[in-house]
Every structure is written in structure tokens, then in C-alpha cells.
Amino acid sequence: MTQNKYVLSWIDEMAAMTQPDKIVWIDGTEEQAEALRAEACSTGEMIKLNQEKLPGCYLHRTAVNDVARVEGRTFICTSKKEDAGNINNWMAPAECYEKLSKLYKGSMKGRTMYVIPYSMGIVGSDFAKYGVELTDSIYVVLNMLIMTRVGKDVLDALGDDPGFIKGLHAKADLDEENRYICHFPEDNTIWSVNSGYGGNVLLGKKCFALRIASYLGRKEGWMAEHMLILGVEYPNGEVKYISAAFPSACGKTNLAMLIPPEIYKKQGYKVWCVGDDIAWIRIGQDGRLWAMNPENGFFGVAPGTNLNSNPNALYTTMKDTIFTNVVHNTAENTVWWEGLDKNPPQPGNAIDWKGNPWDCTKFDKKDKSTCGAHPNSRFTAKAVNCPCLSDQFNNPAGVPLSAIVFGGRRAKTAPLVYQSKNWQHGTFVGSIMASETTAAAAGAVGVVRRDPMAMRPFTGYNMGDYFKHWLDMGKKIPNAPKIFHVNWFRTDDEGNFIWPGFGDNLRVLLWILARCDDKVDAVETAIGYVPKAEDINIEGLEDVTLDTIKELVSVDHDSWKEDIANIKEFYELIGDRVPAELHEELAALEARLG
Ligand code: GTP
Ligand code: SPV
Ligand code: MN
Image (cartoon, rainbow, N blue to C red):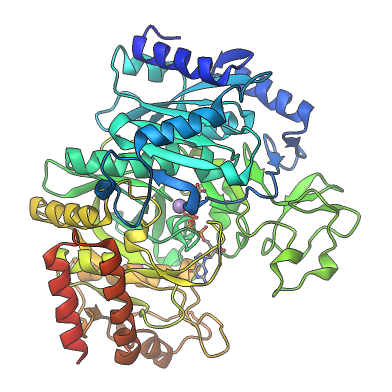
């Protein structure tokens, strides 16, 4: 499919190491994809679902020990350890290549190596970047066909250029002890072995579009961020765009596809989804920041997705979708997950994510092992099937940003929303983000950890340098978006969420956009500007009063002071590359808290 000698010689080298029986080039055609689906079904790798109810949909179960990203086994392999920094795991490139070569050696014997040429961004556009992923997994091929733009036109656009990202993935034995997700930013290379799950193996996503791309962005003067992109359409037809960074499983897909509350819908407000996970951002000729979504699909969290919380996501998954680790309803040959509806398949008709018979009557909210679907079960769905997909989705330039929003999952401390004072302070606000951990990564769930800009697991270089890059970008943007912070997850003493969230988050977005246009006042607090309670519209909300909003936007100095101690430790951990400006912001915040 190509004469590119860099592509061809690299494939020869990788094939000599992994020793596949045959090599198949993925051309992006429907015929080839359909043949691969049939093959995956014949071996049990995938299950074809009820084609009347769910046309083009399939179910896949991963190995039980392989259900989420593994941050402890993810490495940034720069020649100097300081360039990876203290937040990333580091291995010397030569050592890592040697170690993994042994794991790859002969791992594809008796198997097929698929060659996937793919583009992040619109093929042939200025801002697109190309990759080739080699994998021995049909599941990975079929996911990449949904999540990225794949095919011969990518190779044509690459031409004779050596500038592509080389990704090698082998399932090997799925051995946890030898699972590695390794990045060589200086070599444009990603090596992943012994996993078959999502972010570990769909190498265009977190590995390339965030870790490698963040490294490239710093070198080339742009930004790769863990952000959704959405457009809010006003009744007069004007659309304003927002990007937002929340940690994994903290609400990006939901916010990106939100449906306005009834009172806003009636007036003609609409929300359009440009992206739900990753944004590549650069300065446009007009001096504004422009964001584009390099992906072509959604790899979304299934549990909790339903007709009330996120109908757009649910509709998106009703055709051409791969479901991973959800419940199989064998009576109807459909799927189910916790929070879909109140009708789980009954015992005898239900297989859980592990492939065992599942008894929904034994479900106990407090015991995750009784779940039918894994908490990090996912759908892989095509962007074009999303009912609220923005008409700018395929615009190679992306969309101009009015606001950047950071957010985390915090039971206390962080208010519903606050605005930073300026870009530098906004960068500080991003740098001190914290969130309770979720099932999206292996490890404990519900522990508060600092997750700057939601990029802790995804920055391909030193976190201190990353902060510096944010500050440097700010100096170069004539017309910078305003920076905010939100928290949909404050809880009462019984642990219930106080804010209704989901579609009602539009009420907060509209305050944010009004602030960007100087159309609404705010109250200055120690941490930044919070809304006057009466400026968050609560019309049509049942359990929310003016007092609820007052409580939600209150800034509790004592819990913030506790946070300061933790932030200091975190900055210490990042080390001496944390820019002086951020230390100054921290000292100023501490002084304001008294
Ligand atoms: P990744 O794909 O891992 O990056 O996750 P994400 O940030 O896209 O998170 P997603 O939108 O899938 O939401 C994850 C979980 O948070 C789901 O269980 C949602 O139901 C829940 N969630 C999302 N938005 C809200 C909200 O506004 N309020 C509450 N209480 N829960 C929410
Ligand atoms: C995340 O964990 O942030 C995801 C899912 O979006 S994964 O692709 O597994 O990284
Ligand atoms: Mn994500």
C-alpha cells in the first residue's frame, strides 16, 4: 500500500522480532472490516449482538486481569530521566527496548500482524499527524477503525516522509507482571505489550494523541490536552466553544453531549459535541486559541449512561458499536450495564463481564464484585452516529475557544464553579487540580490525588516543564480564553451529590460564557471569582434552592488550607522545574486564605 521506505523497513524489523505467520495491511474498506468481524466472531473474540436491535454492534470481554489503564506500568523513556520528570515512570530507552524486545520476540508466531495506517485529525490537513500501529489483535484493529481515520489515504498523505508515529502492540500472554506501555518521545515510538485493553493498546489515543503529542506540542508551540470540546448554541444561532479537562471517568463525555434542560431547550439553546476526550489546541491567525478533536469516535464509560443522564451517548451506541466488559443479555442478545435502566437481564439470561452467569438479585451497591458490568466497561462508537455532533467536527482548523474549564471529582473543598483572575492564575488553578480516583485506571478508587489539568497520567515529559509550556503559551495568545474550574461532585453529609449535574451543567456553562462576555458580575474570593447565587438559574430544578447554590459556591478556608499543604508536597514531588510564577501564585493564595 506504500513505497515509504521508513514505514517498510520498520515493519520488516518489527516482524523479524515478533515473527508473525502473516502480515495484513488494513485498508479502511468496509469489506475488510466485515471479514475481520466475522473472523473475530468465529474464534469467540467477539460476539455479534442482535442485529435488529443493535445493528453493527458487537460484544467483547477482555481478560479479567486487564480492564483498565495501568499507570504503574506506563513509562516515558527519554534519554535524560529529568526530562520525564518525577511524576512519570522512567526507563532508559536502550534498557527498555532491550527488555521489551525479549517479550516481543516470537510473540506473534502462529498469529497475524495487522498494519494499521491511521491519522489523528483530518487526513491531509495541516494539523493532522499520522501513525502506524502494528498489532496482533483484531479487537484493536476494529476499535482503531472507529476511533481514528484509517486507510490507504493516510499512507498517500504521508508520502515518503519519515514523520509518523511507530506503534507496536502485541498481546503476548496478557501477563500482568510483564505488561508495559512505553513511550519513546525522542524516537516517535510507542511499545505496548501484554495488554488488550483500551488506553493501553489503542495507541492513537492516550499514547500518541496525549503523551507523544504533548511532547511534540511543547517542541512545536501547541498543546495536546485531555479535554472535551463543545459548542453552546444560543437562541440567536450564535455558537460559543468551550474546552474542558476532567480526569478519567469524571464527566467529559457526559458534558460534551449534554442535552439542555427543558426551559433552555424551549428557548432554542443547543449543545454540540466536537470531542469528548482529547483536544489539540493552537493559536489561530486571529490570535484566538483553536481546538480540534484528533479522534474519530468515542471510547466512553458505559455504566451510568442512560436515557436521562446521556441520551445522546446512548443513541450513539445503538449501531456500529463495540461494547467491552458489559453484561450480555442472552435472551435478547443485547447488552446491559449498571445504571442503564431498572430491568437487568434475569438470572439464566445474563452473563457478566467475566463471562460467568450473573444474578442481578445478588447486586449490592457497596460490593463492586457483584456488578454485572465492570465499572470501567466501555463502548467504542463512531462520532458520525452522535445526534449532537457539531457541524465543525470535520473542520481541520477546529473551533475558537471562549473558555477553558478545569474540573475534578471533589466531595468537599472545590466549589461548583469559580473563575481564575487571568491566564497565569488559571494555569495555577489547573496545576492544583485534584480529584478522587476512578475505575478508569487500575488501583484504589475514591482516593483524592492531585491531577494537574487532568494530565497526570498523560504528560509525555516533565510536569514542571508542562506548567512552563502553559505559561509560555499564555504569553503568546493575544486573545486568550478565560479559565474556570468546576466541580459537579460536591456531596452532602450522607454522600449524595448536591448538584443535579448532567444536562443541568448547562446552567453553569452559561454563567461561564456570560463572564467571558462581561455580561454578569461575580464575587471575589480567596480562590477566584464565584457566582452570585442568584446568577445561577435554578428555574425548573426541583431540589435546588438559592441556599443550595450559596452552599455550592461557598469557599471553606479551612479545607482550602488543608489543601495548600498537600499542594506544596505535590509541587515538591514534581521538583525544581515548577515555574517560579506558580510558587508565587501558591504563596499569594495562602496569604489570601489568611
Ligand atoms: P474518560 O473516558 O475516562 O476520560 O471519562 P469521562 O471524563 O468522559 O467521564 P464520563 O462522562 O464517561 O463520566 C464518568 C462517570 O461520571 C459516569 O458514571 C457518569 O454517569 C458520571 N457523571 C458524569 N457527569 C456527571 C455529573 O454531572 N454529575 C454526576 N453526579 N455524575 C456525573
Ligand atoms: C481515560 O482513562 O481517560 C479514557 C479511557 O479515556 S482510556 O482510553 O482507557 O484511556
Ligand atoms: Mn479520557
